[in-house]
Length: 428
Image 1 (cartoon, rainbow, N blue to C red):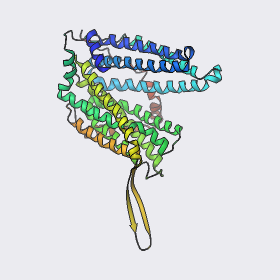
Image 2 (cartoon, helix red, strand yellow):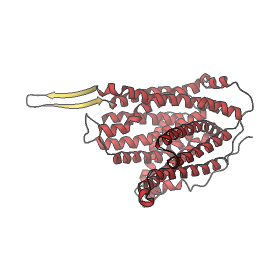
Image 3 (cartoon, helix red, strand yellow):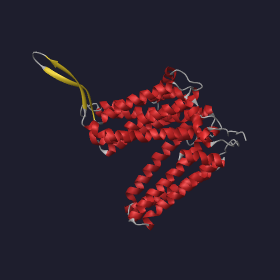
């Protein structure tokens, strides 16, 4: 819906209006979903559920397109990293807390109310939709810079991002990066369940470790992006993420061994840390390189290309799954002597391992595309790397003291208590 969204926004000339109405209608749909178990049979309810999710997703796409362009003109360029990193930190903390409370409610629903568990989901959907409407009310209070009044040819508007050499390079980088990530990421959980035979509870623990690292380093990467540039942050965080993807192929040699679990924990820590930087910088560089007043078409086109690459990657991966299931690549070191012989398996790739290696290769092609992008303020990645390491060392030194430990524990809650900054004045 990115292309229709551009047309709607340019027609109405108010991104705020499009965003609010899309969000409001999308929240109302979840009240319908909540009512399905009470008013419809299983077969009819299932069809209605799919239809509601489809419409909700379409509205989210339209509203998201408007919101991205709106934020491009609202948030100052030199504060984007700090602003969006704090926003994501709040979302992660609330997401974890609310998810835990919701899971407890679902598990204990029948004990408390004595009715079917499906009604617990209805209650949560209705509550979530209600809170979502409060969010729409708060969103309506956010100011908007007026869009340009001139009329533009719709097709020229769509083609303009492709004619912008620097933005076209950005789209190629983000598309190749999304392809690399989504080629491997959908198989991580399958790999742990099928190949490593881990329990679901252990997989959840690993996911929480990754989320904690992601939360912890969002602020660090955000400050680095504001201080240097988004491209500089990507030049450090992207290779870090790709190395962690490649490391999945070494969790078996060819089966589980004594380093499998330590390596899995290390992989999830590195992935969470790196993904924090990639998430902040990739989103902000798109906002920054989209020209003011023309961000709608630029960001929507970028989302269209990026989503296409992210969508076809797991499909291609799935198509090749059976092919790689019957292939194996091994490298052996063999020693033979007059008394003793032994063989050491130094490398063993099979099935999903090939996806991880291929994703690693595509990821480094994406880094080549990143090197061609021009962004104001970019510096050598060595500087960002040294600053990042220094940022990590500072809080670690304080852990030895009681005050330092208290600061770490209280940090997730402090982000809700920080004083608000000055209001941003917008040109009318």
